[in-house]
Length: 601
Image (cartoon, rainbow, N blue to C red; front, side):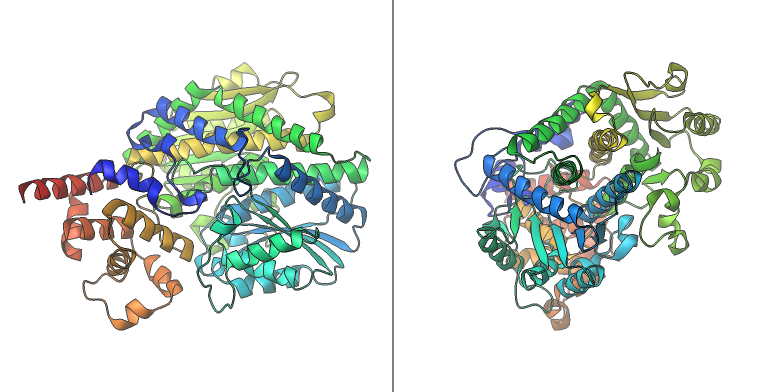
């Protein structure tokens, strides 16, 4: 397949929107830092696109039907908040969706606690709290486990607003929970939040299950006519990195759910009626956060360049965050492992006071291994003594944080390296002193203005978090592009750790080779099981067995791609990759070799 055919094939495959190739970012692998920022800016702008789409299956965030559904869900949240003893609001998801659910629930409960109101929100993440920091494969693919977990969390409650988040409308764990809710509509009001049309929801069979995700989504749509269930699925366009729903999907999840929860809270405790105008205005405020963040494109490009330089020489990037910005850093770092096949210490996050600041259900998990060592003290004790000048350190803080603590830690780092940078937020009336900003080589410094009505810590934090998320998504994405982990705009070295990523790997192989699904799957299995001769047991095994084996292998997708494109053995494919340590270069060389061979023939 030549490159023109390859590029065209990106649009021809019948894929869900969240898995498609975005034409805006098709050449991001050839872009420099400044160009990457502009590409990402244009992709993120699609979240707020106002162009009217007359196709009812492809509605945008500002569309009246989407806004009305948000109003309806906010009113359900208001009902729960007015009856706190009998009610519960549950947010649930896998991976990024579960991490966003955790952040929103802990922040919203903190706001309720500060206002002496009962904390009635709970989060569920597939795999439990360890999934906040690491990829947990098996639980994500288990619909029965999702249902059991939800049942346990809601024991004794008479009214439950359940919001199941699945950006691609594909997660079996969430499908099991929604199915459970649909069977108990006397207690549950289920909400599905995703970013594909219902007809594009996953229709493949699920583990030990008689239904699939599309079936659940269609039943939800039917119940929405009676306002017993709700489907919130605005279409945001394809991700900048194909399938990387941690980016637009994660940002839109945060925007939509915070808007709903705040509207419900104001209606319950400030008698402010929830209207479509109120919801639209809150979305517009988040659009202003987007504009403000990307207005600092030069500094963002410089941070991408610095992080990319570190990864290119096999050094590290460390996020040192305070309060919820620390959680944003931990989340971004944890997502690089499955997305780019990164090692856990390529990009790592640390938060002040460790798990006590996280406020997660299961408490301190640091005994589980080095991936769970996340406090600033841990950074000072374990990382700082061996810090290299090539390691990049990025502080994440606001004027509301302990600036004496920020200064003291920055001083310690500067004794080891000058490769110290910051994303800092402050207010017009509460600024970060210039002497602190001068401690950093590069500072992405944003000063925000808030109306008197908005001057509460929860609203300010929401905006600082979203802005920081956009910054870190850009930095980690750009750095991995520079490292060669992206080909065109595909995560060519993803880890095949669950059924969704297994299907994505096959789709990537199909796009790049033009081969059939069965041919691509066979090559993928050869790479997974490290053999040229697949046994019947291997080819007939369940997907979860394949992903379990794949989780112990590196370079699975690149190996399969080389085997197909070069018609070679497993050993020859691995030798090819060994000769080209940068994955993107290996893939490019593979296509060039194949093209030259066909020309000679």
